[in-house]
Length: 252
Length: 357
Image 1 (cartoon, rainbow over the protein chains, first blue to last red):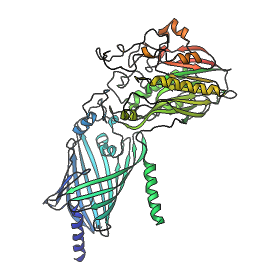
Image 2 (cartoon, helix red, strand yellow; image 1 turned 90 degrees about the vertical axis):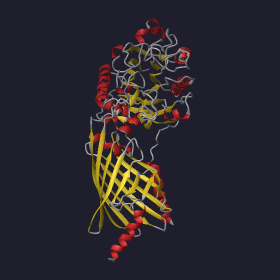
Image 3 (tube, rainbow over the protein chains, first blue to last red; image 1 turned 90 degrees about the horizontal axis):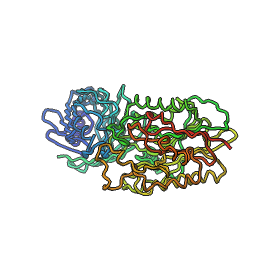
Image 4 (cartoon, rainbow over the protein chains, first blue to last red; image 1 turned 135 degrees about the vertical axis):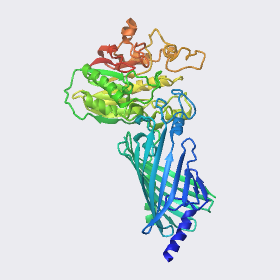
């Protein structure tokens, strides 16, 4: 009973701000970050997520599952429609090829078909943030395209390449882990990794690891900063990138 | 405390080592990138050395590439690139040349499906060694979906190359800072050819095409200064490249109407268009012609200009101007403009035989 109460308290603390754990946002709590989607806690034990970038709409639903031993469990479903966004990326300023068509990331020689992707993930979380909370997740994604998207039309950049790979390769396997621990009243550190396996693709894997210091000023503002290390294979070969990582989240 | 410094140092070094520059810039002089074939053939020293210069247009032959012609494609498939390279390799092997000075060679560019053309050419020709210098190297070009690019100049040789250097030429002076950052960094690549008994220098240049100011004049002067230095150090050279300049006795100097993608594209009242009007630049090669020996002399060129044309843009197979040259400080024989190769690139190879003195 005492263990369950402690677990409940920890779950309340972590539920204040969303994370990649099996915990959900509190009912009716909403939050949005500069680099993270809009999320809202629902009344039916689920959490809704919506991408702010309307040209690449996606909708996710995270649902609680029954405990597995000492692991809190959840499942997450996500559907995404990237066509409008990818078409926009072909000519963001409305220029034509050779103008030059500035900021274009995909040549206009390629046709972007209608595409829809579906992702399913299972998440398990153990422990609490004061003593250290570990979350593990695994899942897969598939894409349905009305026509083939040319494999020459990839955007061969870190972060972007693995996230769009499902549309070129039809299939992606995801796994990840997150460890978060409170270090003072308002400060936390977070270490996580994401792994993308893209069998059959020109770039077959991407490994992303980030470490963040998180300042949860209040239940309304949270600031995190750190780095993201990306080691991946691209159509031209393997490469590592180390990028600064900063995010500002607002909750209400 | 010591541990803390170790941790900080680790993360700082990780950050620095992991950060490849978005755009690669270069020192004034730095080492070229060295390659060798996967099978080395031994060649004896020769008295007559056959030299070729060729702008190979990154192996896409006469396909309708958007950025240097009137096409609507930026990414060329791997199959098409390999087909283009096969044509180039066949021509090199048939010509039995000893040194090849190549321009517009891609080693890791999305536009040519990431084929390492230097290694491919070494593995598929009778050449043994390569010295490569990038003129355009960026993780991403934010225009037209070009993406990642690494393209440059290449010296191929049957004999070992030593002391290969990349010499930076001035950046275009008529561009804003942002465009200049992502634009080409033209260079001259030099290498000492270690032919037994008689080492000599090979020099390869690809000068600016579209500058509307005096950048091309600076490039020609920079190229000549490098040749002068080699001679002053007591060596001989074979040099060449795509100089993007026409001979001083060329009768036609303005190609702006010819190069229009559609009739009406060119308006002479608009601001100056680079790359098609050579009228004001017509004397810029005089210094080179006055100092060194060309494979095709001005007299030969003047007697039959069209026979020595080496370029026509895009998919226009009818050659209409001479932009490509071979030079030496000694003498050439058998200077030939290979106009039968007009389907293999938008430039055609020029060869000549250099007599070792």
